Image (cartoon, rainbow, N blue to C red; front, side):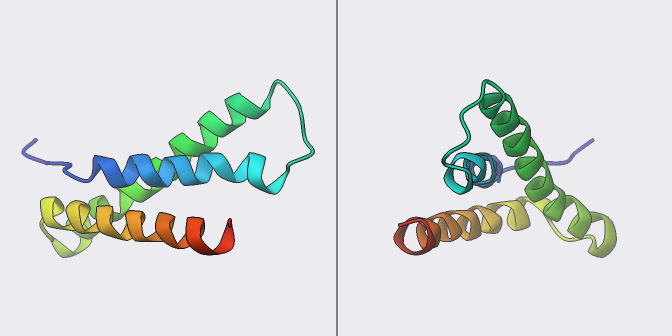
Amino acid sequence: SNNWNIGAEGQFTVGAITGSILPIVFTEWHSPMVLPLMLIMGAIGGALFAAIPALLKAHFNTNEILTSLMLVYIAQLFLDWLIRGRWR
């Protein structure tokens, strides 16, 4: 299909962030369902982040290599902001 996804690291990072929201917000919830829900939330978060370059390609015909690569830096900076700020 001649489509490229160079930004898998950013999708992985956003998936990890969204998957870790559940145990950070609900610290008192101990259940066997926590891990499967974390996996589902991580997959949805990564997929939604992967949809950004896809939508930009579909609507504006942007280069998906550049947009997905630039979004990696956005994901890393967002994670850095969370770790040093909100989740500290």
